[in-house]
Amino acid sequence: MQAVFEQVTDEQLAAVGLRTGWQRMDSTQVLSNLAQWSPLGLLVGVLQKVY
Image 1 (cartoon, one colour):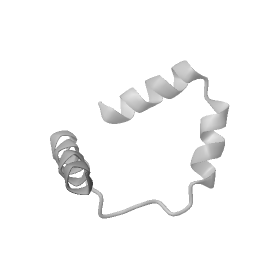
Image 2: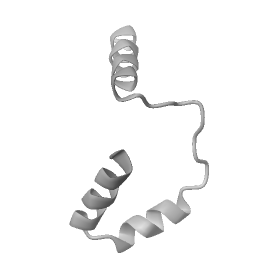
Image 3: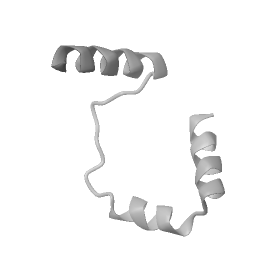
Image 4: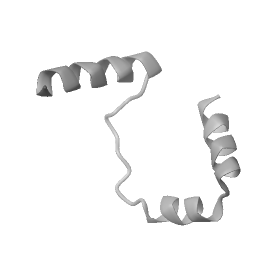
């Protein structure tokens, strides 16, 4: 199962072009911003970042 999970994850990362070398360590600011957004606002913000 572990090998299958890693293969699927690697394929998904390659398909969307995500880089996993850097990770944000402090997520407190992100969580506070998420609490202020409505679900629609969050969706629009995510779509803008992706586009």
